[in-house]
Length: 117
View (cartoon, rainbow, N blue to C red):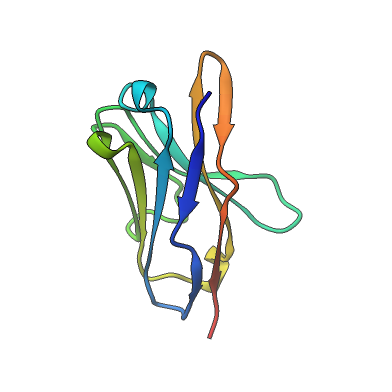
């Protein structure tokens, strides 16, 4: 069982920054699993924002966030981060942390990010 808890969302003006954090409860598997951030717009499917490999060397971003968002991880503290810069109103969504273990997907409850003036 893996429990993921996101934090760091909120209201920010366009052009601003936020840093999301995701703390994982299962330290035994955290360091050997890839981690990802997804987001979901109202009425839409969740979409991948960024993914980072277990060692942090392989990173993938959605085209819409390349150059603005940075995913990173701290395996010693079982935490993955998403630094979001130059935020746009189109980034407004619920952001979810994700990992998978033995064929099972695990999700946090999500954190709301709202970009508005």
